Image (tube, rainbow, N blue to C red; front, side, top):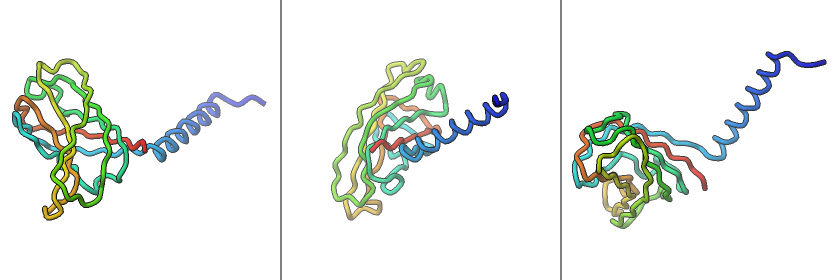
Length: 150
C-alpha cells in the first residue's frame, strides 16, 4: 500500500535530521560570540583561548554582526584552517592563519588572524586567537565558528 504524502514528509524529515546529527557528531561546530574592539595595527585578543576548544584541526569562519563595520567592512566573512592546542604552552610564538575573505566590500581594509602561545608563567598560559586590522574598526560583536575536521 502506498504511503501518504504526510508519511513521506515525516520519513524524509527524519532521515534529514539523522544525517545532520551524524554530521554534527563527526564534525562538531563550536560557536562563540565575542565583543571586540579592533584598533588599527594592533593584535587584539578575541577571548578564545586554551580549553575553549579540544586539540585538533579546525576550519574557522568569522564575521562581524555589524554588516557595515567602521564603514569599512560590508558583509565580509573570513575563513581559515588551523591547528588548535588546548594544553598549557610555554612559548611566546605566534603563527599566522591564512585567511580567505569575501563579502560586499572591504575598502582596502585587511584583517589578519593568528594563534599566539603564552609562557607557562602567564596567568593564562594557553594558545589565544588574535585579530589584527590595518584600520580601526571600533567595537562590535563577532561570531566565530570552528568546525573540527580532525
